[in-house]
Length: 278
Image 1 (cartoon, rainbow, N blue to C red):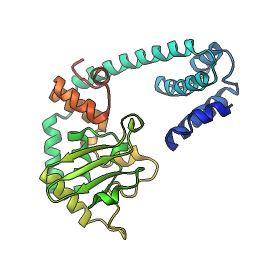
Image 2: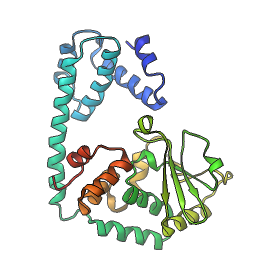
Image 3: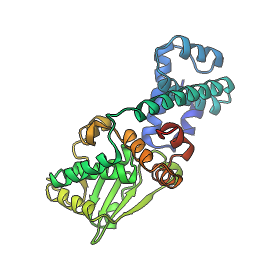
Image 4: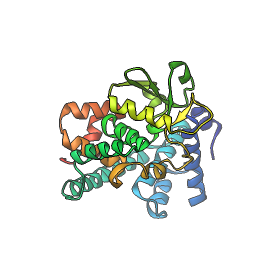
């Protein structure tokens, strides 16, 4: 099924992205035992009527199928229309969910987040402090949090890693690996917070490793990053919900612009999927 044209078209993407595309194509074959070169109406019928895939899974699968058919110069308009319809359905679900979150009295406030950060620092929970600080103040996604702590810029040559460089008065965060890195390239952020710098130093002191030049923040994590972070993120939340709380606390264009820049997410997407006041 995976033609030479398609494989060649994706060969310059990140290895994980290539793997994901291959998995999606194999998923379609396993589910329906049919070619993707046929009529697009048959493909849509299979996905809509013959599968139990949820909306997000359908959209993910269709994105790869659409890419495959575009590369192979096959009709794709109906698929694009269907993908747009799924997007609209998901947006409606997000709005309903956000309204429920907005009316949920048990949802923590921004003040609760900051208070929890302070408690973590005082309790010497430095790894948790660093992770949650970066989510709250720099709006990082899960993938962005897989950081390696170093002392010098010369130790950041591996472009397949993200880094925290501890300097005399601050910390520099370098992101090479994140959701839209192919579009925006390497990003650097200067973090001047003294408590944050102190937490990073304390974390290093408690870290057991033979390689002092390459200290991983998420030590021990293998494949399931979301499950690993679930144990670290405060108040039983996830990074997406924290972003919603932050945006809701400071519901302004400036705040939305800051989050948009940090996450490389369009402001319109933030307003639709994250703004509790929508």
